[in-house]
Length: 135
Image (cartoon, rainbow, N blue to C red):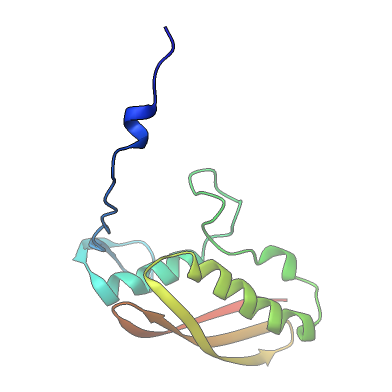
């Protein structure tokens, strides 16, 4: 007997957005987890985790999670600035709660180090984020 899928194709599905409540991390040390957080505070943690997880490095994360930064080492700053901006946007925009990423500013405090700050526009409001990379 061959199974029939016709009844399944006629069903309607409702997509339900999951809540953002999650465990509260200490973003300064990255070690302590205490209590819960939600909405904009949870989004700060999402941005922190996405930008501090190297893509394709850990099998627990999907290939859409994280950011690719390792191959920027040794590249000229004229390449690293626009590429870093593109990769940050690509990493963050995969999350449906993030609408856009804008207002990038770059600073190179010393040779081989690039610091960027930017604004992440989420459905809960805007937040400022930053990332420093070695190039």
